[in-house]
Image 1 (cartoon, helix red, strand yellow):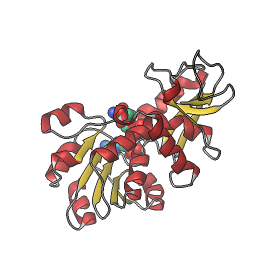
Image 2: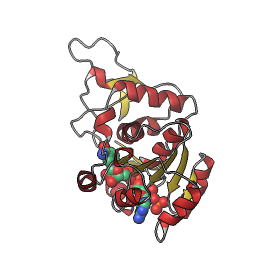
Image 3: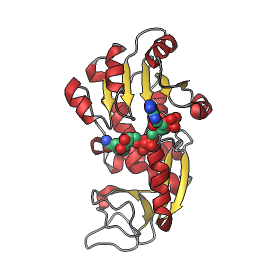
Image 4: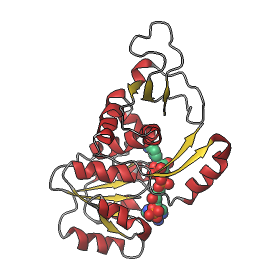
Length: 239
Ligand SMILES: NC(=O)c1ccc[n+]([C@@H]2O[C@H](COP(=O)([O-])OP(=O)(O)OC[C@H]3O[C@@H](n4cnc5c(N)ncnc54)[C@H](OP(=O)(O)O)[C@@H]3O)[C@@H](O)[C@H]2O)c1
């Protein structure tokens, strides 16, 4: 979430009324006009970070950050990402590129141009996707980040990726069955991570594509679009 500090609690010292901030709360307040947020869960909104992207940093940004760190992406490695143009995936691919990896992104064709523009090798999912990944990688596939769900853990294992270098943010039964990682937002929920991601956006090094912005009274339509599961980037609610 992102917003303006309206009131300070007793003892709050780091912010002033009127400050523009990015933050989070574990109280499920994403539909709220006002939220009570711990001071250490806030970071200033840098100039140059649009409100929509600022608001999308938690949870999509923190989830992507956790997923990339979970598999320890290194320079020169090859990483495959499922759901690579979605809210979480579109950030995973950019963070993995920044770590110096070759990134193969699974997505439908309408999203291939966006992926290629971000230095990602786009591949259509379905059919013999494993064969297409092997051909595109041309060698070892070091890590796999799943942001879609089954059957991608099994596919990653078939491609020879070790369990400790596979992370899913959604297929928790699959992760438990196969012993892969399943780190998500909770692993990166901090003001430090939000500050780091916001700085990347402000510096022009990270883009959060905004698939749509909805008013609170349009929330049903926002969820209908989300349910279709074909967005490029984040759907944002503006309470
Ligand atoms: N663990 C956590 O902390 C955490 C936090 C946030 C989200 N999540 C979970 O992460 C998942 C992704 O969230 P999101 O907001 O990124 O979703 P999203 O924006 O709806 O993205 C879904 C993506 O899935 C792709 N897709 C659709 N069908 C596919 C298929 N058969 N194979 C591969 N990809 C396919 C779509 O790509 P195309 O349009 O190109 O088809 C779309 O870009 C959700 O399940 C969400 O609940 C977990």
